[in-house]
Image (cartoon, rainbow, N blue to C red; front, side):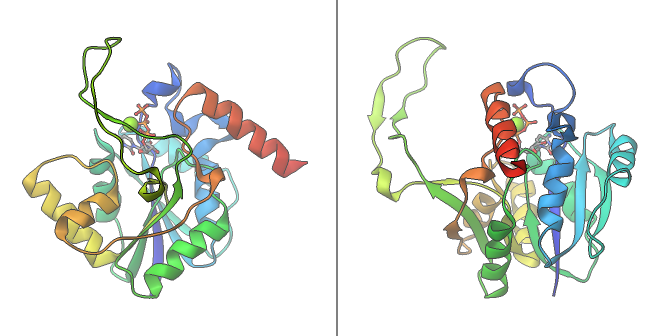
Length: 237
Ligand code: CTP
Ligand code: MG
């Protein structure tokens, strides 16, 4: 059973601020996307990485990957992405060869996920779970609110029990057919999902959580870049 990783990297990175597309920004001198590709290729299980590039950036991304070394056991493909994350993931799935039976979906924006987390997700899928997500308990208490105008006070509706909540990360791992069915179903009923496992839940298939890792955080806002640089510096020390 061959395992492939699809890496959606087509986002602009609006919350990070103006500049190059987020996945192409440097972290410790190397583009974030290269860190993410290497993080997937670090797993012996992953023999193919499908990178979903910004819509007009596939040739550039192809050259970028060619200029950086990857482990020998890993091939890569580059395809152009779409307007939403969900569409980008689907375009990546469309490029998978027939012999892939386990699929990881990993955000380029989580460049520092440790290989042990990747391996744990792959193992849980190989052990029979159709969908697996790495996740961590929350440190903040979470409130559900009635969203109001920006800056206006918002009424609180409820406070979910924190101990039952998990913040989900990537790579999320799937049995290939389950993930393809989920993407087809969502394409038909239309509503957007913020993660791939959420689409599988809508199918009624079971999704399980395995322990995530603090270093699998998503680079979203400028402060996250500060943290990512510090994590890299600590690794290199
Ligand atoms: N992504 C994608 N195609 C899109 C939008 C997002 O492939 N049309 C990818 C991003 O490149 C990123 C991952 O999905 O690796 C998670 O998305 P997010 O962190 O939201 O990145 P952006 O959408 O780029 O950032 P922002 O929402 O701040 O613009
Ligand atoms: Mg986004």
